[in-house]
Amino acid sequence: MFTGLVREFGKVLGFQQNILTLKAKHRPKVGDSIAVNGACLTAIEIFNNGFSVELSEETQSHIALESYQDLVHIEPALRLQDRLDGHLVQGHIDGIGEIIKIIPHSIGIDFFITANRDILKLCIPKGSIAINGISLTINEVLDDSLRLTLIPHTIQNTLFGQYKVGTKVNIETDMFARMVQHFLSNKKDSNLTWEKVDRILGSY
Image 1 (tube, rainbow, N blue to C red):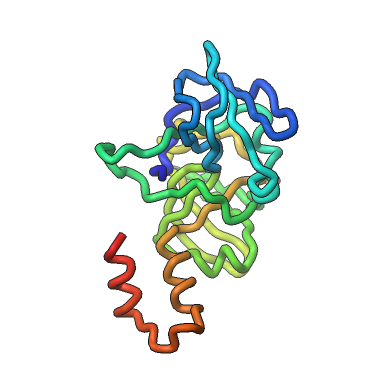
Image 2 (cartoon, helix red, strand yellow):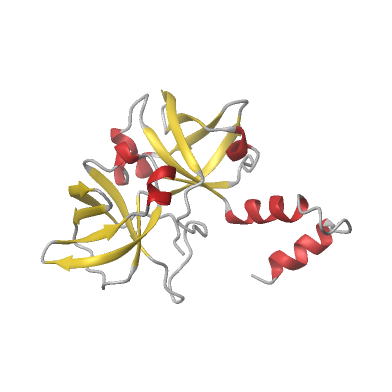
């Protein structure tokens, strides 16, 4: 589990078959979970200035592989004693989006990101979403895209400042939205109500 707050930028040293090797200050232990551009991966080797993680075929089929060529966002797994400053992020990528428009404002920048309908139906205006592992707030849900407004601090402390129109990104929707959709679409329980969903969510 993660919070969607980037801790550092890692430098990709190599990506051969299923092994991604990164240069980073973070020193995980073998077996630790680490979010790399939002995807939860497992550390399999540690060396002096970085570590390697392994990507399954399933993971590679769901992430924007072209974003693992230079710098990447790194976040170690959340510890129970840590503050939850972003939102709960699992590191399970739902799909790939593409930045189609960038509009600067006097304070902040609007990013418009395309997404398929399965992702968009899980997006709520003013709800949370993780883009390349960064916890962000959805400003607007459009027919085929999302509008996100990033403040200068986020631009300066994430890789969003380097993203351009055409950049592809990993998208993870809010885990509670996914749970609600799953429960409400479960035909086995015809008596499922919002009250029951509320009790289920309250147990987490």
